[in-house]
Length: 241
Length: 349
Image (cartoon, each protein chain N blue to C red):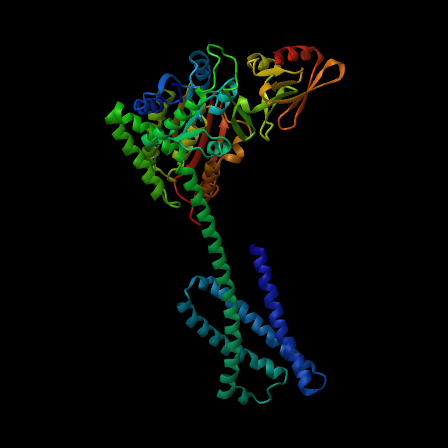
């Protein structure tokens, strides 16, 4: 697995590198000293895993994640940060407290490898940089944050300058345009139903004809989304053999 | 506060002795079953006035002699003696009054031992009760005050612990030192000593005392040198210490707290890092300590947060009254200036 270490302190990065030498399954492909460096490196190196410090000058670890399209697996490293730990009650992958203990790191690494093994069983669009069902995104709404697998998101709904993200019972907002998002999503998994909506095709439960040659799509969970006339033809094409 | 207490004293004094005269008059009417003579009324009122005067003079005396500060075992014999003395004096002063108002007809009976002893004893009891009430009131009040003061000091102490044993700093320092063990064992040993120095000082620090400026400066240097291990080239330090600073004593860990503040809110927020500049100036027997750090105060954002700043202001006030000053401003677009000015001596209260 390719990993990227993000921490503003050189010694902290060095210490983690040293600890990771014990784990040959994790290959450290780069080190970033701040969020901006990290964003470039994530896009260039495409790591599977981030070791991320939360408090950094400029942008925090959270802000960094918000700026990424697809987020790799993330392990937070922090010296002492009650807020961060609280924020992850919702969907913690893992975090490491500095100074990091070797045994604790081993646990984390095996957790990550476990997760990665499960993931490989699903086919991946190799070489493509589009976001598929296997990818996860980072969503932050006020104090709460989530790592959400795209396979769990049934609907994106545009709302002014924001997008409402529907998953489980949550609808947090992210600051993005629906057009920009649409370009990044894998069109085999997600479909632009109308100007306002992008739906996850694997969540479609039923389709009914609607006015003006449009369609009404019913999603698992009960949400109903209208497909505009222009998109309806494409939709039929896609869904038919 | 003082005015309220004064007023309370007068109200109590007038109403208690007024009531005494009133009760005497009423009970005399009830006992004889007929209207009271003018002379008798005058006698009772004059008697009450005597008590009033005696207790008031007694209060002036005990205040002047600081009896309120005496411990109970020393106080009790004094109060007994004073009450007895006042009893006799008031009895003697009462004799001409009772003669004028026609209470005592024969002057010899007034000076009989039985009379003197009996009346003096009763009067002595009055005065003793008066004194008991008076001292009780003050003891209770003082006790309340000391409780309040203690609670106040405890809260300051707690706040200090909170702000001084900054876990973020300690764990980050430990993490850097761990990495340093491989890279530069000599430096890591030094860093461990610096960290233990700081920890020891945080733990043994006394809230009321003062420490030598030079000792405080050493802690500040230890602290900054530890942070340099962590921030490396991002943290630059600069000292400009007036030679006479060594003549001063300063509140322990106060400068360190302010410097740490500058690192935490200034340097650590800047990608390129910055400078911490500590400067002292001695003029007119006052020590001016200036801490400059790269960064900017965000308007309003800092006001609610600064538990360290609030503490500093509180401590300065407690130690120096209004003789010390504190300010924290954006000096220009790049630097925040934190400045304290302290006098050479502590104000004693």
